[in-house]
Length: 316
Image 1 (cartoon, rainbow, N blue to C red):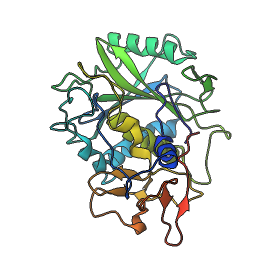
Image 2 (image 1 turned 180 degrees about the vertical axis):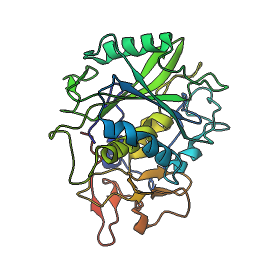
Image 3 (image 1 turned 180 degrees about the horizontal axis):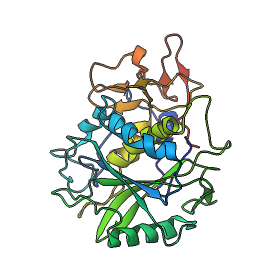
Image 4 (image 1 turned 60 degrees about the horizontal axis):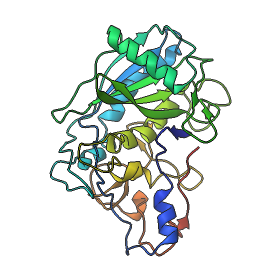
């Protein structure tokens, strides 16, 4: 559940701004700041060699199919950019009508011990060139609809050097996201570290590896889809919808229990349509749905059925 990204998704930005500045009477909707989104996202799973846990390999297709077709995932459909004027530059003109799982493939990496995102990127590009990984689907606007989700076997670790202090998979994060450059396109890619060791497992909250990976995906995918940090020609920013701040509702389980949708544990997402924090795409947000209350110049408050509590958004 610990999040890392070479582009540093700013999960704490909303709370930070609410603390330091006078904000409107109600929590603000996300703004489209320019750049592309992932339209009609399609998940392709890549197993890094044959030794990825067998229960993970058998469970991920069903997990992704359930997650991507759920009323929770449907919340993301409102964040298309067609007809939306960004804060700067042109709109990418994209829509989100469907979200889907496509397939899983197993590669035989020539460098199975690749220990950095740079080395992993080189290997993935070579596997794409050879055809071992299916080529990405490109939308009419010229942007990737494919998201590669790469899973590693037990014992494999890699380092994300996109931080002042490099972070190591499993030890510091469960997943990290970046854009893979291939054939003149940027392809959103998420690396999922092996989480089978005791130091990485949260078996108290997630009884199986697949259920923990489901929550990791539910944290990363909304950010990747709404703000993949892919530029649009003529735009000065590639922040998408508030640089992935769709997760501004997210907090740790010490504040409230995470909801479940079709048996999968998911974080709350911000809905511009429903004006609050929600976990389905229908109905208004309400305190019972953990919606954000009217704000004063103070941190975000979340109603728990009793007194509101202030909390900050955390990333591990």
